[in-house]
Amino acid sequence: MDFLTAAAYFAILALALLNAWLVHRRKFVIRDEDDEQ
Amino acid sequence: MSWVGEHWPVLLAIAIYLGVCLGVGWYFQSRASRGVSDYYVAKRSVPGWVVSLAFFSTFTSTNTYIGQAGEAFAAGLSWAWVGVFWTIFCMVSWLLLGPRLRNQTAGLHSVTVPDYFDYRYDSALSKPTRILSALVILFATLWYMAGIAKGCAHLLDTVLGVPYAWGVLAILGFTCLYTVMGGMYSVLWTDAIQGIVMFAVALLMAAVPFLYAGGVGELMTRIANVDHVTAAGAPMGDGLVTFCSLVSFTYILGIGLSVGMKQISEPRCLVRFYSVDNAAGMRFAMIWTPVFLGVSLVCVMGLGALVHGMATAEEAAYLIHHTDEVVGFMLAKFDNEAVSAICITGLFAAGMSSLASVMLIVARRRWATSGRCGGR
Image (tube, rainbow over all chains, first blue to last red; front, side, top):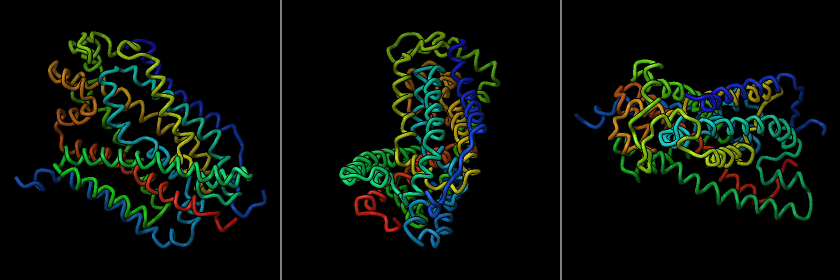
């Protein structure tokens, strides 16, 4: 398998890891229907 | 041998699966009937891991597990690049839309995508926008629903010999039953169960060609240089393992973008965000949904190329023109009743998970065009 073909499989897994890191360092709150806007 | 005797492993697996789906619908029946918010958005109280698996199983369907997996038979291992774009859109969807849509729809008491447009952009044009979006969604999802029912019925016909019309009736009937009984509670929880099954089946399907060939090295050697031909009749040679030798990157980009962006635009995906219970649940779903999707795509998107290692030149010459039959061929060639039963149940689940979501979306259109939610 050449480099660019193999890169697709590693890229998918790398993106999932990158996403986990991005979410991990982010802060957010979830509001309920009765909360003040 | 009788029909039941011949097909009992598949029948048993499907019966267990349908029993669980109907059980979930029955369990949530009373909770779903408490009000509109309960029925359509499960009171915004569903755990993040359930929503995450539901999003994954709703986006991926039999099209991914049969169509895209089979497409790699003609396109080679490079077809996985489509999965890269899908994973990017999954990230974008959860990172940019997830928390925002969850908070805004809760604040606006919105339960559908059209009524979100109406409440969010409160203006003279918001009502026509709401009706137009409802009509667009209704038009698009009905075709999609018909397509999935057709695919599942063909699967039943091929595997069990169930007549096509009866297959369509049974699939629509069962899905309708548990969707009507439990509303969004039922759809999300059954989707989550279907997501677990589909994730396991993706791993199992990817293992089949390697087990058949006798190892990773053996299979990769077989497909590295094959004596099979392309659809045009040209020799494949090392095309299966060479970047974009059998398919153009423009085509990969087209499929990657057009299908991937469903995750940021299709109501059946977007309404998943409405039901997440809290910040911890949202964080879990944001992290794990791209993982569930990504790992499944790694397993499935190159599968067809691996099946070349199981096929003779004559079989490959037929399959190259019938790529939708590649997964069925792989299971038949592997010839293991248990593996076939599990995989067919997973494929069935892949179709039904999308079908149930689409049914609820179609039902919402009646609600969306009928007026404002009383809660606001």
